[in-house]
Image (cartoon, rainbow, N blue to C red; front, top):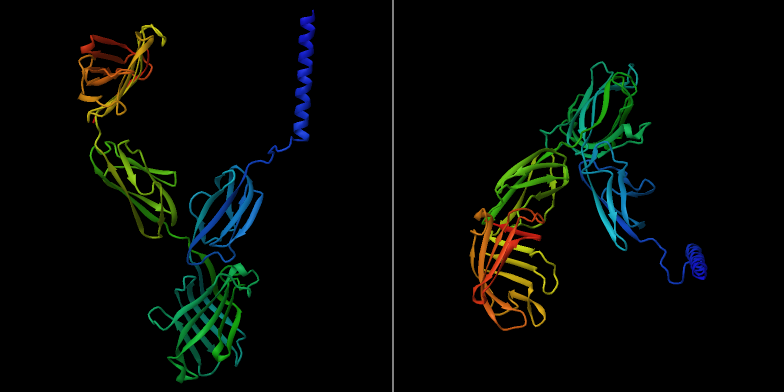
Length: 499
């Protein structure tokens, strides 16, 4: 009875202490305890290329809750993030721009360190076209002007502007921008215009135009004039909502108004994709027999030969992750793998993986045991670990628990740590195996542990099945000592490698 009551008392006291300790830890941690979660930082970089970069940059959001503005080519840091994976998204990307790769993406933040990620953005051209006329009134001496233009944010394009006056003689003047005239050109382009009710529906562009007709002032024919134009795509063709303005500051000239005939249209041109050609260049001996696999951005894969090329069509312009995998163990890739390749629009970008292979040396390895006993002194049980190659390099450690010397099992060694020992011959088949091609034999000189005695030996191994199957076979003989053991493996594995 006393024993039972004492046991109950011990149990109650123990529980009370445990509960009290738990409560104390939750509300009042012990001095010096670190209860702050492991945190790290995330550095986000944007790399934007193209012709009409996003004018107001982007927004980076982490886990849908923390957001920062970032420039088109900028860098921001999020501090105090709990270590682990976080969702990172780039938003506010203009219609003419695209993000290469995954967006949003998952980035793992390390404790006490910073993770880095980069969003590669490519922007295409913004295009404004117009064909129509503006006018003030169809009464003398009023005017009406015709326009025909096609201008892009990459500063390419053309323009014809006809100024007409309601005069009896039909007076008018014509200015042009034409690629065939190298002195005329588009010199500036703004993706938006504050003149338009919705600035995003308009553009402004500047240029140098040549006057080719002027019936009122013929002396000006051939002259070059700087101009500024504003165009607003406010509605459908013929709606009368579009707006056009044309100014020549040097002449104090400005005509503007709603488009009475025709249309102004603003559009974005997506960046045409490119192609990526990946080549492999493999040198050396015993090249990879089944080639490799090329993967782009972790999603698109193609097989490739040892010395071959494959092409990925329709790859978005920008940076891409390219990886070569399926490489044989005797081969290695020189340089970065994976590597980052920048694909250009409307062209084929090439990259090469250089691979070198070394000759495969026939090899027999083993790690296991034979015998019905257990690893105790005096038991019929033998353990072995060996690695022998056809180039006559290798090691062997063998213990026979049944062969007792000085009160301990006998162990023998072969390897650099035992001068005078080594592999002296290697045969890539063995008659000890039911299928000789699945086995190998090697001869050598071994040393008994704790003694100076060295003996010649022969080991045969048969790789008849997978590890642990009990099908593999091992034998060792030391003729000068009249010793030999053999048997199927009771544990472990023997593996044969052939060129």
